[in-house]
Image (cartoon, rainbow, N blue to C red; front, side, top):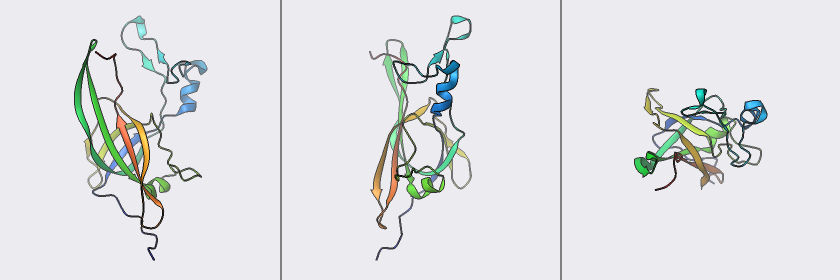
Length: 170
């Protein structure tokens, strides 16, 4: 009756996403790439003992996927005792058909985009022109299958990206 029509994205763009490589991150810093308490990539000490250190975070090569861009929070400044911090939130919608073609759906039918994956940029799908590059890194904070298609299968995946706090609240 309905066939296999699964809908489509509206005015698609292309998102470049880098997935967290947990094995390479864990192997970094002589096998101590994850902080035992916080379960996140461990920072390394800065050169000379001053300034910001670097992260042991390792990422995959860029995945370029068609997406629909939804409204989020633009660049909102929040004030902390340590200074200003940018707060941003962006919502992208992906089609399961595109995720399946890219090998990003597991044997149980779940997308393999996960929290801590990072948005690198968004490009115009027709011209290839970069239309958005986050000033501060935006990471996946939520992944939700949000629609089931007319053809009786999942068709849309909504992914929420957000920046990370740099300081304590004021």
